Image (cartoon, rainbow, N blue to C red; front, side, top):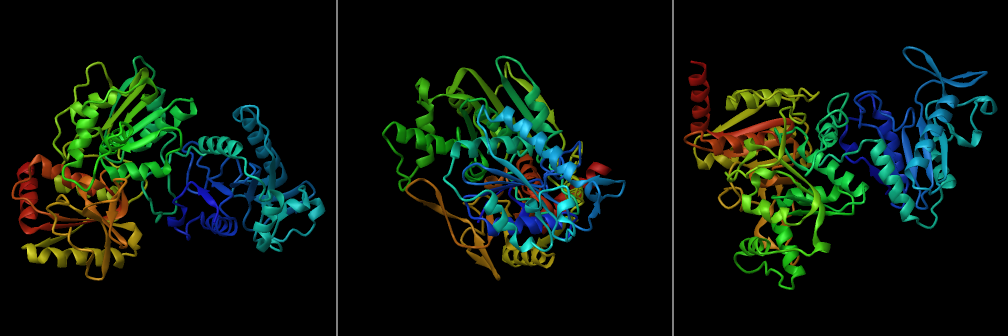
Amino acid sequence: MAKVFPSGWRELNPLADIGRELETLEILGKGLDDSYTVYHGVHWTNIESKNYAIYGEIDFAVIGPSGKMLLIEQKTGYLKETQEGLEKKYSEKSKNVPFQIARNAHGLQHRLKQALKGNSVFVDSILYCPDYKVKKLGSAGIDPKRIVDSTRKDQLVEIIKSIIPSEEANTQIQDLLHQFLSDLLEIVPDVNSVIGQTDKMYTRVSGGLSEWAQKIDFSPFRLRVVGTAGSGKTQLALSAYRESIKQGRKPLYVCYNRSLADHVAKVAPEGGLVTGYHQLGDRVAKLLGAPIDHQKPGPFTQMELILDNYHPTDDQMFDDLIVDEGQDFKPSWAANLLRLLRSNGKAWWLEDPLQNVYSRERMPFDGWVTIRSDENFRSPKRVLSGINEILALSPPIASSSPIEGGDVEVLTYENQSELIPRTIEALDRAFELGFDSKHVALLSFRGRESSALTPFTQIGKHLLRSPIQGKYDVFGNPEYCDGDITTDSVHRFKGQAAPCVVLTEIDFAQLDENSKIRIFVGATRATLKLILVLSKRSLDTLLSQRYSLKS
């Protein structure tokens, strides 16, 4: 199966106005093997142009193993054959298809020459019109061999292979093209799995935090970014990470949660290090010849002590330090990480005090420049409106998401014996709404050690995939039980998201700051739907708080 960038396209709505492009992606993905890479602009929209294409009207770019590139322009529906060649009619005017292909291919090749550092690359183009039979191939204005119309649509994959065959791999060219197309598509990989249930999805990157934060220039570079949940902090972190590698520097990305670090590592390019804080301690311990035994008590304390006393050599240092979810870090940990940064290095510190679930002491930021972003692009309007109302946030956080989402639903339980049945009911409700198991996350308000859900691998008919308490493999990776629904604590799931979140075990007598933070963190993981399962006394407390604030 071919590698496809950006990922996440399988979760998009096939009935939306990009459905035909999704069909083509399915054909390319299944028909080509993993030596081929497919780049597309299906759901990564440039804010300024509102255009789904990679460049102009080019819809897909296929890279063969040798680094040869084939551009595919897809035209669905009816085409008109004129003396000047094929034309496609749009709402405002008709466009000449051969001219579009030639213009855009030429523009792309011009930019390639600038980006490929003197390397040459084979570039060809085809027109794919699966709904239309070209009657006069010779007068279409395009080489007939480069037209895949309705009579040849079943041969699309074979035609691609004939133009860019499976030859000896050229990883250098592949890497350069990947960097080039990633920049062109403005792919800052979204670590969230976003499901497309609306006609249009926008990735608000080009005009958002990831763009303008990187335009700030000062020395020494110590930048603190305070951003609310869903403002794009992790996207900025990845963007800074990629820019560092692009400039030939060596970046270090660190977060507290192992699960987030593993998730980010899957989408981050090679050339730096992505790690959790304790993972880093484990790595250093091995480097020093004293590996941590994860089967013995207190491995995390040992990892922290290793970093407390570690003084790296020059070749063990980094050019850029990027700390994500910085509110989770102790001040002493920050000092340990800054020792790994070269004197001319850049330090990025991204945090949200509203997500300080561990009640950490605030790090001193003397000499740092601070910028703030209060826009939430991830949480749908109705979900964020519900969060604002439930928690009586002041000032309320505004949603900049283009998605309305669903209303927040609340289920209550009187006592502990009702908790699991209500949680099952909430999961059943998620499936009733049409969510697939891979789109649902079951999060506990409580930590894994004290959660009533921890012993379960199944509740009702739902199989749970959760970390097994205290179980790690020889590499320090947590072991998971088999299951379909991701289950974790709010603490560990921070920095991630899911289309539908069921936040359960919410129970408190008084709404203290930590309880408020945990609800906020768990609730803002939802990209479409939020279902809360909370005790009756917690609901009464929330309602009384809202009443007292309005009085």
